[in-house]
Image 1 (cartoon, one colour):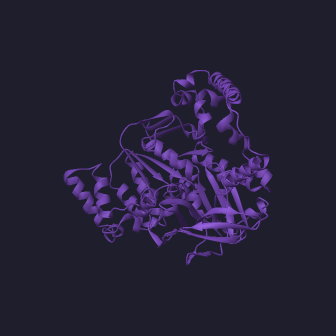
Image 2: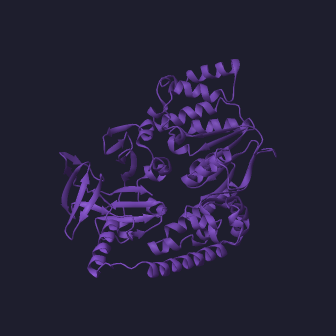
Image 3: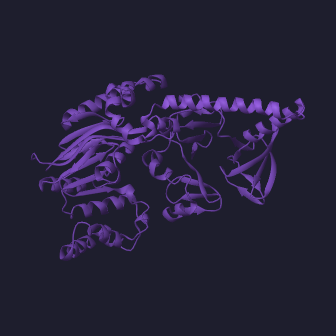
Length: 495
């Protein structure tokens, strides 16, 4: 390994803009995904970086230049080839055109033609040239991208979570070794320690968006395995919430946060943010109270008329409360027949009236009175149990845990766009079941309203969170999670 640095990430931090208006006005950051990450990839080095799927995604996007960090900077010496199977699972273009378009960024002329010819001789490519990428399995995509990476002469190669999609790990290792011998820098972004232990010659562990270890692979493996042993000693949910508490706090509360994120605040604030916001708010509130008081005095002096009776006031009040409380309902697991159609679970219904025993629900132009236990009533304004989304994610199937960022990205979007990018086994007016993946999208008109998916096998959420009912609604950071313990499935609404 030489001393030339091919890729350098300095104090990289990334956070989304705060959704809350008050936090934005005060220049505060939203959810923080990366904090003060430093990465140095040397010539001829294989750097293994271990973290969770979401963190790896942001690291890959920031280092490859497709996502601008909130703070810090990336320096490169040479070209970057960033490969991620999940970037192509819904690619609608044929494999043939994809290969040609990708290679044109790195080769030209006779060299381009020769490389395409070599790739066409590979069985996994030759047999699938006319197929669309979205029709290929993830294993096939991983092998195809691996073959392509072996024929592109570029200084920096990033493989994101390739190991989980490959059965032929020896092929992966041989290509990585080839890059290493040719003096290229290889960055292995992995959720598993196994490929890092086998292929990397340097190790970085990122936990809760922060670097937790950086050093030799041997030492890193020792420290990480000890961490897993300690974590396995956790006996209950109270201990689990306290486990790693200091690291969880560091991402928001340590002394360096204020200092390092001053730049973040300066980038997000406007001219108004540089003024004392508290004084502005207090002044506006006082001004509003003065105007309101003057208006009340003016109305009392200038207007005399009949005041509504107490009964009328109470009736109007009740009408207001009722209209605010009633929102909508979901069809429950037994289905519901309306307008001659058997509606599937989680079909959205409008609630137009309610009493102590019944709801009047509307579907299309038809109304029906149902008992309260025939549908699942849902009101976003209700005080549902608040829970961290990442905590609930642990009780979902591995498919969702590994890919929820991708699939949930379609929520609240247009149905037409979803249908253009996802292949469905079943598709009708109310819902669509993704082909080969246990995910069902539910529609409200032309909008993708919610996403249904399976819970973890042998789910322990009922015992861990002391759930009492068959269906529990959780309020999470960006919406709601509905868990049906009978069917062990989830419905996720992002709001």
